[in-house]
Image (cartoon, rainbow over all chains, first blue to last red; front, side, top):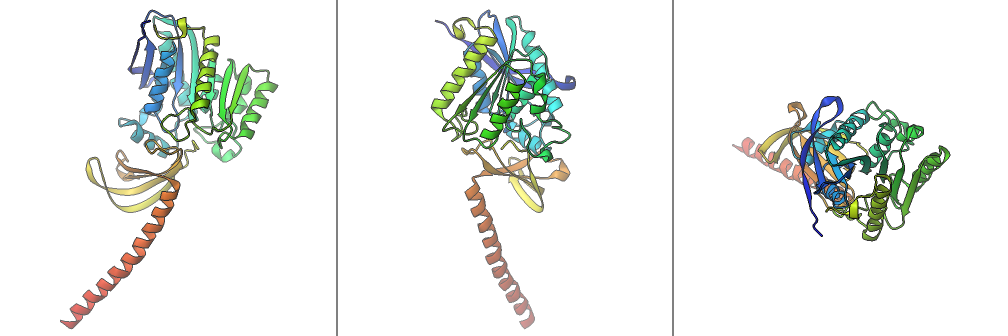
Length: 255
Length: 99
């Protein structure tokens, strides 16, 4: 069986029409392929994020990962990330606009099947929860250990992050998959339980999976936090969830 | 952590980066996920010149334990160095007085 994909940097039009760069990987072939927006973690648009983007393409999803810190460029992703951190991070409103722009990019592709998923890691997990409660047109969202969905310290709310995502849960309009390590401190077990309680109370469609022996970022093969067994199971949950809600790609592989 | 918490230290000095030496006026200090170090969390320090726009930085990512040891060594080096240079300064002053 022939397999192939293309992975490259592309431009997208984000919040307020700003043009930024994104990493884009898609299966070769006519499709149709579902689309996924992959939201990077706090350290930024790094090698592992691009690896994760290609992994989803391998499984049959045209996946775009916007460089959310591009406005602080030019520069290498780590330097740009450092400037963004010093500036207090990116504003929620801006992230929502950038993700909306990436969704437009995906929809405009001739091989798109019209379905769109979102996935994010770490701060990107929080962003995923946020956009799933803020943007129409998302068919499935995956929050991987997003911290600060629940905000216990009001000092963490500011002009850039004015609302705790948990308070937007009534506006969640798509199925949500949550993956968490039981040894994580942000979000900790209690916060994950409280998030689930809100989803349940509001009658939302969701599935949460908690992993023993794993902490934050247990998918990340470039960190000591990597846990092979839990990560393999977690990725299989992601692929199955998207297969169910974004229409199963043929043979589930790039062809 | 995903915290965005940054401690800013105002300072006077220079740092050598990719483009050679530069004057620096600030150190941004944080403890969070590193970009490069093979650690889950690291103490990051970015030496920058904020007055000139902070477009360039000299960066380190250290384990928590090494950061603490570094703090001790910095203080130790300052303590011994200041004593030695204090002696040197006194000797120089004495030599000048003897002439």
